[in-house]
Length: 195
Image (tube, rainbow, N blue to C red):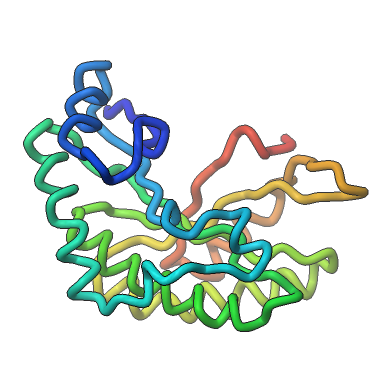
């Protein structure tokens, strides 16, 4: 069994060798890698997705090769990676279209990192039926790329906001969702769960 830690907590990409060595020295042998760190949540919410993922796949793979080498040198593996959040900002529909292309690039990066799973955060809307339909369509869209790169796409239970207060997410229906889309896995986010 591996013990892991979220990579972003130990720094960004500036000195991956030091970060992975520190992670290993702390007793961890795996990381949850934040591929969304170059597109910050607060910026996505105002329609700013930056330009990092405008690069083509080969350029992105060249960027991540030293990070993979540093992890290998330290003896740390990539247990899973997280994509950007949120994927939908109602005021900026172009953001969703762009982030869908970013997720496909992230699947290629996961293959390079030998990372078996990419967390693709669900679309959150207030109407449960609409939410179900939108997410089924979105996850189905990613299945071919996931198969191409050999990376499992995982749904994560997410918090919701009601009356400007963050609340947990009930996880009922997850097994139904994953049964309908057997190619999709599940990442249980304990901090945002209501069980």
